[in-house]
Amino acid sequence: MLPEERELVRLEGEQAELEELVIQSELALETCKTETAQFQHRYYLAVGRLYAQLDDLDAQTAMLQARLHPSDPSAQEYARAAERQARRSAAEAGLIESQPVPPQPLTADIKQAYRRAARLMHPDRATTEAERQRRTDLMSQVNRAYENGDQRTIERLIEEYGRDPEAIAGDDIGSRIVKAIRRIAQLRRRLEEVRHDLEALQQSELFQLREGIEDGEASGGDPLGDLAQQLERELAERRVRLEMLRHL
Image (cartoon, rainbow, N blue to C red; front, top):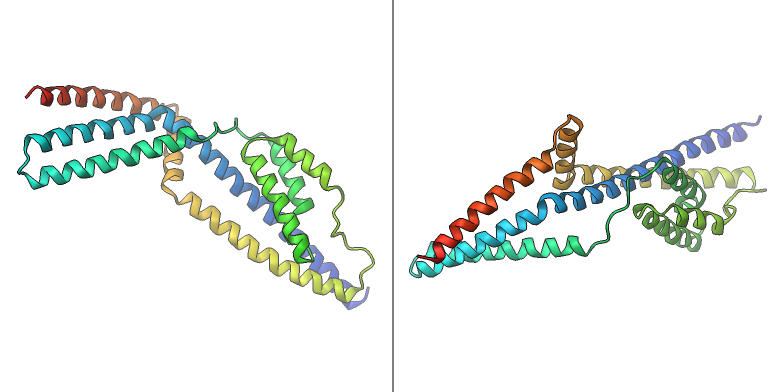
């Protein structure tokens, strides 16, 4: 085997390894996004709406206190702040309620379908800008289908795409070496981007909350149920307090 042939084998081997790493990393990112969205929906149903109700009661109480003490600047400011918080909570609640219900837990089959689609149509396998854009659009459809738990759509996209048009056939060794070097550089950049996005998601408050709740559930507890009971008690106390103020 000639030296350039050995170099081509080495480069294409490195490229194949990086392609698999990128696919696995993108799958991990999309899975994390989907599972976190599922948790957010579950959290809202269990306790998020109760927090919104608490904020609304706090705002009503604060505004009533402000009317009872019109010359107290701190009471006026607190009422305005409480009202702003109640509006934010109500807006967040409305946003979550308007979102579609997340799919059931992701299965091994849909994860495998995602891997097949990514291997076939990943943008980093393109050699022209037009082909890269086409692949980017297709992978966006794959990502949306994955987030919706829609394996049938992923399978359809794979079938429609057919064979990989970027398969190398008959290129000279020098061109293939240059192509491999460029693809390796693209793959390394993409791998860094995906890892950065995944790290940012895992450091978010929502993800940290999810981890804490799921750890408690894995230990046999019911942290969301316990929190919901606590919030229900607080709501009852706030309602009583508000009624007392109304009768002053």
